[in-house]
Image (cartoon, rainbow, N blue to C red):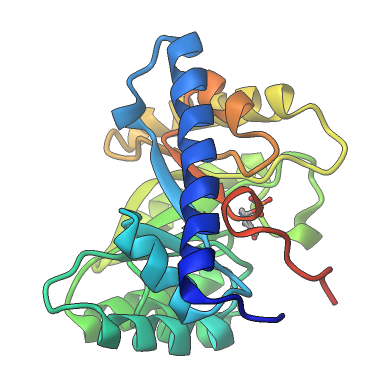
Length: 241
Ligand SMILES: *Cc1c(COP(=O)(O)O)cnc(C)c1O
């Protein structure tokens, strides 16, 4: 990627952010929702720490990353550059290997992609080392294809109760990616229904992480509390390997 001068990159990011904020406001107005109830997590994977710093200047307070080997060094360098006391949450949104869980919990504030009990010991150990609770969401596979990450809907209640047995982990809710080729309205309606039944046993688990660049309006319509938006703000990434 060629790097444009900072001032023009700042303008690009400001423009992308403004467009996304306008989309969020319009979708909230249509749904009769308060935009304050929707948290924008800007997914900065593939983009450099300098973009994260510009986004922070532009008012972003939550960024998303999906790979431990990229996220760890990036957030460390960003936190070093930010003035002391600056607020910036790191949301880990990618598939997590169990041998990386402890390391991710040492720098992440929220993990959106918990989909199996095997991750929990490592996440809890990392949270205890850091000395603060780690917020976790259970990722749900809405089409039964767990190879792309996510627990089967039937497995969510069991996984949720094991999460809540771990000191250091706080169950916040659910996350999903709309299945490829599926109607996001149908997918997010199913996710929100699942979130509703989860709250019967876990009243604090009221976050619904859903909606990306292409489907954030549908997510807002169905009650998403957290959007994970990359491309619409930062531009396109090279195709996945
Ligand atoms: C990359 C990514 C996003 C952002 O997707 P865009 O289409 O670029 O907005 C959201 N959620 C997850 C889990 C991702 O990996």
